[in-house]
Length: 297
Image (cartoon, rainbow, N blue to C red; front, side, top):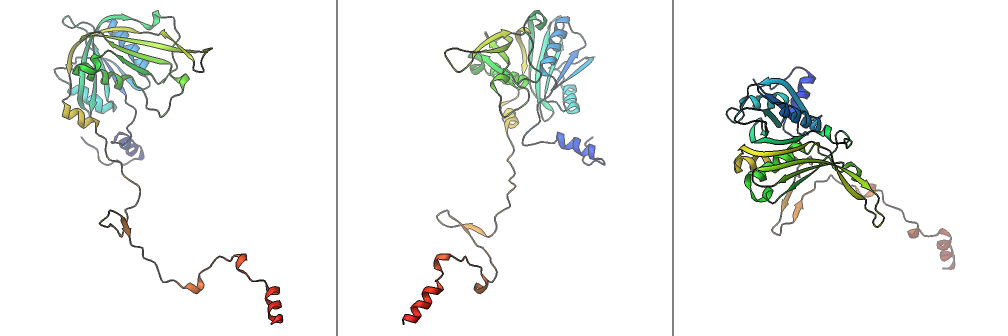
């Protein structure tokens, strides 16, 4: 049921926040678990939630969902929580330890990719200190397949959408603490790594020396199934609405044959005798000089 009018200011603000905008809100994600899930999948979902929060909603209840067979429930959750991203974890005998990453457009499924976890090392096994919460990550896609293979190209775009975090205008050098690396070894094998940057003084340069320390988690994926949007639908999702100009429309204007803008200005009747003109001292005559000239004559 669509609500067009609200009786309270809170409801009005709620609808305005969800309405389409020229500058959209930061993308939030839904993290869900299936009816059957292994311990590894649960740990990976927790790691992803810690990396994504506060732009993430974690649903603890187990749900019997098969995204590639019926995505209606996922679309309903997208509208309910106003989220454009999701990850769904499940495990079965046929497809063990799988994560399904996806995104929505206008609360409808846009892209969806299923990845099987082949190797997982928790961040607790790394001794490096964590990064500041809400840090803007630097995302690196390594491998020519992210440019040549259509599926991996869309997967790389999806992962950048998933991990990019809040949109900011500028980032200071010390703020680039987190490096997220995605490496495509082949058409199926994808490595996900997380690093922390350390800036150290360089004796021979003004720019600092950068060192990387692996943070974890460390995940090796195998690409299983994918359901990607058509090129036309993807192009529609990328379109931006035209910006409305706050400037008033010009009246009484037209263009001549040469393309010059010609305007007609209407003014009232002017009284020239009442116009206040600027009085310049250089134009004033000295009275003493004028009187002497009259006496001489």
